[in-house]
Length: 67
Image 1 (cartoon, rainbow, N blue to C red):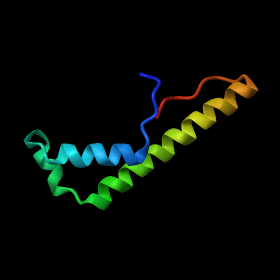
Image 2 (image 1 turned 120 degrees about the horizontal axis):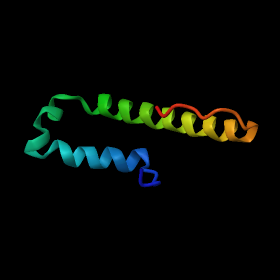
Image 3 (image 1 turned 180 degrees about the vertical axis):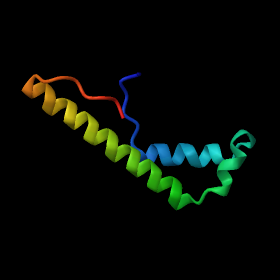
């Protein structure tokens, strides 16, 4: 949407700050490793998606679905 890339390390730090807010108190029940794993999986899938789009554009095929 904003054509910006948010690195996983920045996202992990941001979520750590959010966990301390009362609005996101339910997140405090999640383990830090679980959150880190989810962030890494999301990042890996976005990387794959955009690489796939790049490869498809090179072959001039149909567009891929957004993850």
